[in-house]
Figure (cartoon, rainbow, N blue to C red):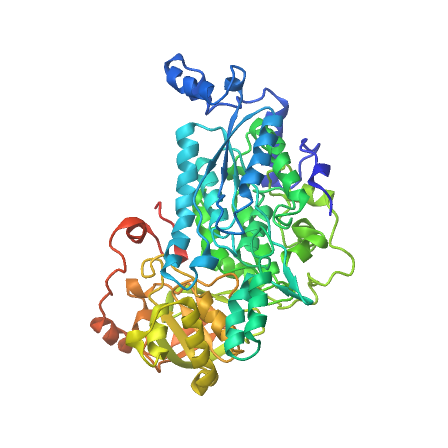
Length: 622
């Protein structure tokens, strides 16, 4: 793998030819060769006026010198904490970033924000805090950067979800977009797969192992061996789950350095990236190249393209919409469908495939995939990036995909001829829904509804003694597995509906990885479908449709469905319908009343009051 050190942060000699990129490149490069802009224009508000003597006294107190007060100040935000493999190494990475900033002649101050581990909270009410932490991360970075008058930012997200850095990464990018000061994201990196007796494992292997144990596929000792070997060190879950999806999208969007998304967390190249980030950030300051110059309609489309090509998580739909809004752009569900219609699914990566991100790293990493997609005319190479060069200029520096590799298919031999993310509308989802269809599940499903008001209610429905049932993740999966395996009607085509799990109803739109893991572990991924107004984990696969809008809590039709109603999902026609007339739906609507909110105080209550719909990105600042 080529080192980032071979990429010079110096400015390229020539600008690309397409018009928008040419104008932007000309502007920023002209700024770089003329009088340099004031690099500390924000921190100068604190460091220069005599009236800010107390501010300066504090800075002297933390060790700054007179010379330091004249330098740009960089806020280094990380999501370090010890309780999670995705985040436990970020303090070390932040130290390397800080040292690189100092070597570049600037001042660096490290600070932390919050994180949530989904692998720990999955299947419990702790998952209600997951999505809201994205906006909390954005708010906290914006707060520190704004209050302290830092001139630029480098953010180091790990994984607020032990598998998918999904919330930390968009949270940091949303803060960058709001602030619009020169910024770079350094991805904490992917975990290496675990190995035992010739088999490879990851965190989703751990989730599915209990289902395999209950179904008799593996012994209890084999199950324990999966758990012991699923997380061998630091880093985000290794497949194309939400972490690696968002990291790849953000690199392609231009907000992180080449290889950031595919370099494993414990690879020495990750520390090289951290040390180099300061040099690139200094160039961004000199060029006055800011996030809103990089995050554009074209670069957002580039992000959508690589998500489709790699088979990325449906969570990316929520997060890209939110990122777009942070820079004043409007991205819609229909934009994702347009890209999905044009871009084939090419990557044989987990959860639906064979390989993990470390394998992709070995054959050229994300830059090699970008190189290939540019060659095929699927990406806009004119978009600017944090290297100070365009996407196409970056691609020329790095080698293409390794000869003979088996991970990324050619366009003439795709896994699926169109994207796996499909946007469905119908009388069950008037404002849209998001399906993840890799092609292995088929494109059509119709069957009677089996309705649950929330994930926990599934337990009540399937337990012989619901009054005495204990709501634990293990018992939930155990009961689900027994139910799915023993109940033949599931195998005859039930459509499982889990509602009341939307942004307001959940609250927090928790993920339904536990039910999908149970279904897949039972071998029923093609036998039943699962619909929800909640989300799905990047590790979820099967015939699944989420983000159904409006959500049940807000009076959406999903809240009116009853057991036995026929639901039809036709991916070819982009339709999701319940077999009820508008009059029948209206009759049920008259009898319906919204359920009481599950919380009435604290952080989640504030989230309920502020959060927008899933189709609008679940943002909280509009």
